[in-house]
Image (cartoon, rainbow, N blue to C red; front, side, top):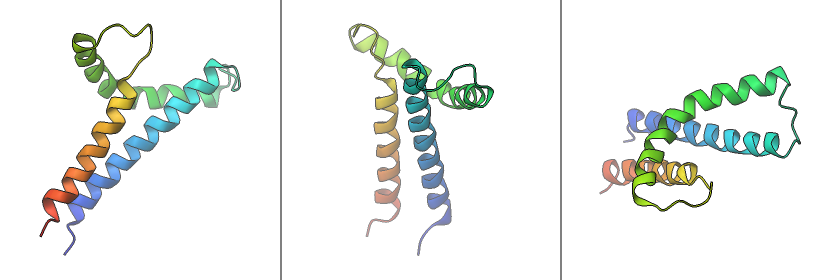
Length: 99
């Protein structure tokens, strides 16, 4: 029997992962001037996603700044967050649905 709470947590993790991917792609499109930064819709979406994603990324940045050397402006925290979310999702299913 499937647990609906585990499925809810898994869906929330998937939504966070999707928001992170959209935030990264939108940031790259804005950086390379493919998308206009002064467009109110683009600006609103980017700031809203940033407000949702930045608290998680800031915690990861604090840890990675201690243990990783300076990489010249390359931010690895989104990759670490994606890997961490994937690990949590797999751990939930393996712990609660194992035989």
